Length: 112
Picture (tube, helix red, strand yellow):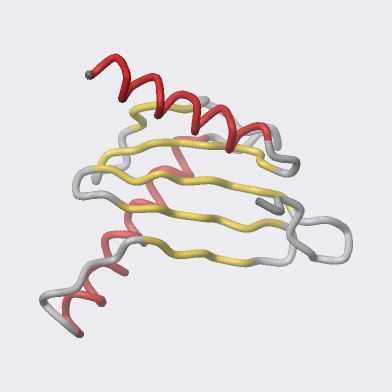
């Protein structure tokens, strides 16, 4: 059963990473420690920097959601910038972070 679950997770990670524009995929714990992912992104930025900064932001966003409604929880958020987009899916003890590029007109490249 565990092997099957691990295999499914690996397949999903491979599928996400294969999308055009995906620069980096990192799985981190709540403290920003990298559980899975590259140590450097394609643009030369350190994955650890992304992991720490985005984990801190995720904890703060989760706190805001819970302050508004203690029965609710943050599950996903997206940050759009001029040149890239950061997607974060949350779980109880870890975060999936995807950094993706945008094309020259600022449009998202990944379509699925």
